[in-house]
Length: 229
Image (cartoon, rainbow, N blue to C red; front, side, top):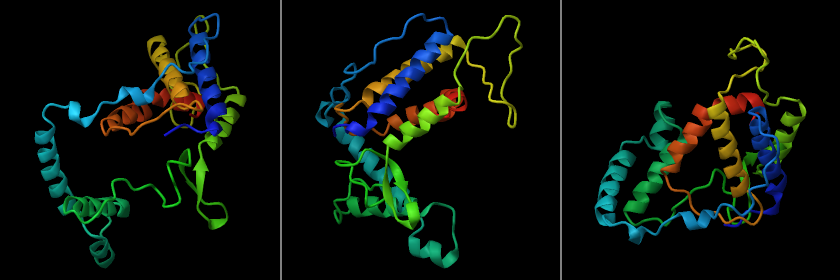
C-alpha cells in the first residue's frame, strides 16, 4: 500500500515534535525531515524463508482452532447476556473457524465495511450526523497541531527545580529522562518517515502488536501526556 498525500502535515508535525525533544536536551540545530530513510516494504521477509514453516503452521493451526472453539457465539451471547468478550472477538473466532475449515476466504476484517485499505489512509470510523465515514488520518494532524499550539513543549529543568511527577488532576508537567526523550525522538522520526506521502507500507506482522502496546502504554505515556499524541 502506498501512503496517500493527506498525511504530509502530520508527518511534518511529528518530525517537529522529535526535534523539540532533542532541543530540550541541548540540540542546537533541527535535523532534516527523515523522508526516504525507511523502506517499509523491504523490511519484511517471505514465508518461504522460514526453515520450520510447516511446524509453525501446524502449531498455529491447532492453537487457533482451540482458541476459536472456546469463544461464545453471538447467538449464545444474545440469549444469555454473556459479556465476557466483545462481539468483534467472537466474530473473529467464527472467521478463524470458517477459514480453517475451508469455508471462507476472509483473511482480514476492517473495523467497518466502508474502510478500503487500498483507498483510505484511516485511523478509524467517524459518525457525523449518525452516519459512518472513514476517518482520515489527516484529522489527527489537525488535532496534533492544536495540541502544539497550546504551548505544551518539552524543556530542560531550571536550575534547582524540584522534579514534579504528574498525578491525576495536577498540571500538565511530566518528567522525562534525557535517555527516554532521545528514544522517543527516534520513534517519532521513524513514524514521520513511515507516514510520509508516497512511502510503501506492507502487511504488519502480529509480533508488532507487542511493540505497539509497549510504545502506547509504556514508554509513550510521557509523550502522550506532554503532547497529547
